[in-house]
Amino acid sequence: MFSKACEYAIKAIVFIAKGSLDGRRSNLKEIAKGIESPEAFTAKILQLLVKNQFIYSQKGAHGGFEMEQAKIKSLGLMAVVLAVDGDNLTNRCVLGLKQCSGINPCPFHEKYSPVRMNLIHILETTTIYDLAVGLISGRTSLKE
Image 1 (tube, rainbow, N blue to C red):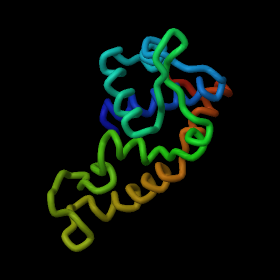
Image 2: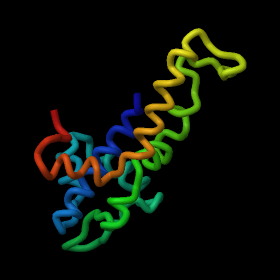
Image 3: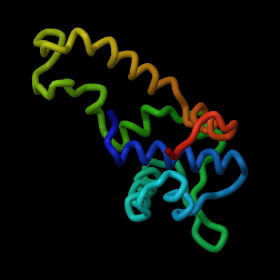
Image 4: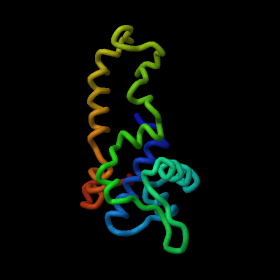
C-alpha cells in the first residue's frame, strides 16, 4: 500500500517518538537497526523528516534525532504519508487509469472508493503518539 520509503519513514518517526517520550534522542545506527532498514536509506528518510519539520536533529556527542512532545501528539499519519509518497494513495486510480473519477469510473472505482475514504479517515485521525504508545506498552513492534 505504501512505498518502501514511506514504510520506513513511518517506522522511523514512531521509533524516534518512542525515544522522545522516554526522554532520549535516537541516533542513525540505532534507528536503522530498530526498524531493520539500511543506514544510507534511513539517513535519506531522516533528512526528509527533518526537512518537513516532523523531527529535529542535534549534532555532537549527545546528538541524535528527537521529536517535540506536542508534535508527537498532534502529527497525523497522513502528513507523513503525503510528505513521502505524495497524494498517490488518496487520489490515484487503484487500476492506474489517468481519468478515473465518479464521473468516469474504472471497473473497481465503486468498490474501492469507500475503502479509500476509510483509509484517508484512519490516516488523518491516527497520530504518531497513537502508534508510539503501542511500542511503549509492548503491544506492537517495528520488527518481524
